[in-house]
Image (tube, rainbow, N blue to C red; front, side, top):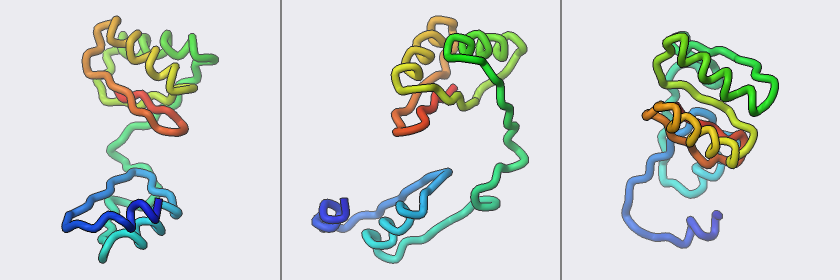
Length: 118
């Protein structure tokens, strides 16, 4: 990656955003960007008090959809993050929630864990 990024020569502004930036990525950024600026909002690697965190144990992937539906029946208003077992399962949950009428749903392709954004 360093050789690819290093071979690109053009005038540009680059911004990199991450809620969880790994130290090896920070080191890569320092080597490929000129005079990078780091902005941390709140306390690094800590949850903010304005975000409610809740862990719902679903037992298995099939139970996850039942648990998600129960949360919506209780009147939950998005957004939320849902961690799925795999990219395939995140895509399945995506379509199951669309079928249920949850319109503000999307999913992202991260390496691990896969996250379903609702």
